[in-house]
Image 1 (cartoon, rainbow, N blue to C red):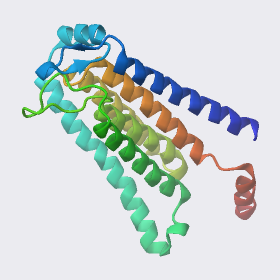
Image 2 (image 1 turned 180 degrees about the vertical axis):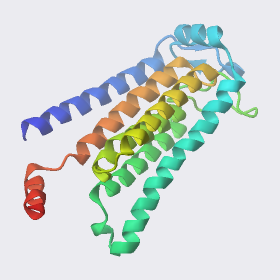
Image 3 (image 1 turned 45 degrees about the horizontal axis):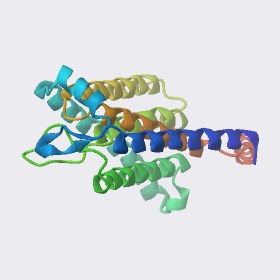
Image 4 (image 1 turned 90 degrees about the vertical axis):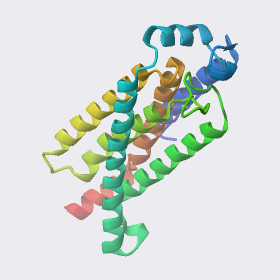
Length: 227
């Protein structure tokens, strides 16, 4: 195994283990019934202190909700690019490799979301339309980081000659920060939900970044064709 691949694998495994350890701690440490309907919450002292300090804020909740919809526009943008190439080239295998990997990444993020909807770690500190919903990790945090960071990573490869890529990346970064910040201050999640969302998102994004790295042999072949 080459040194760079080995290093990337070690970093990915380390990030994944960190998320698993943190999730386990949230699940079993300092568990008390502090949530709605006497729902049990891990790391209850920290979570309760943060929630008591900031409480529920409907303004930030609505902002985070609508900004979350904006992030779907990025997903739609890249989906349309992929569809355009598929129609033009008529074969999935001929579609830009980066777009295919991005699509696979979106599917992986969706799988993670569904998994934590079924495997409950914590419930929300507030009821959603009278219903107690899964809270950990924050899905808005995962969506914003994974979609925006993957866009910043892949845009440089898809549009290397377009000056507006920098503007797109700045917009993606601003959107990500705005969603995570407003979601944190909205009070619809415990602080550990946000932290968990950040950890798993960074792990997934690193995996995506690593998957885009082309082997040296392929790079040489591409350069030879260009020359």
